Image (cartoon, rainbow, N blue to C red; front, side):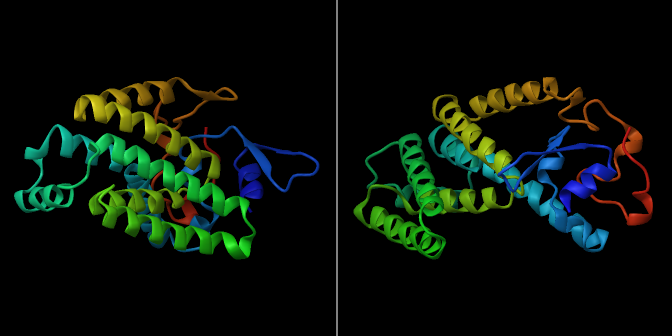
Length: 240
């Protein structure tokens, strides 16, 4: 369905022997956050799901970094009750928030990779049981705090909402870079990382097409299927 829809949009599909996947070109940032189910339902439901997807995309990218930055450098930005709760949970944790977050992220990545490599019937059980056992044991042993386990678990769930596997992998790698910047510079580090990432994305091209097209550069007539999907009667022409 994705290949057929991309061909109707004027894109090119590359099929290679011995693989069940097709490569679509050109590929844009907005295409990476669109799923085939968006075109099966009414535009109101599809628009709501896309907004949820974009929100969780940002959470997947920024949530651990924001947690580390706020708890380490900017605790005054947190509500008092929440700050006291986090401080009480981290009272016996021997590691700073940055090391704690990196440890939990690496464990989560290891569980994800183990679930992929194991047989399908066992992989999901390993993911669920491993996450529960390791998370609960680590909290009881005082190695990590409960809020950090919640943040890492929420980040992992948010990452699964990204339809394209390659984009999800990129977000996971960028998340580590932002996490390190947040651990050393706080919110200023996150701002520097986001600005550098935005500059990089604006300068990317996919087979001659801007990676952020049609938002950067702006194409006013091509905005019917970016974040929100217009009704089908308005999707009757190709993008410029």
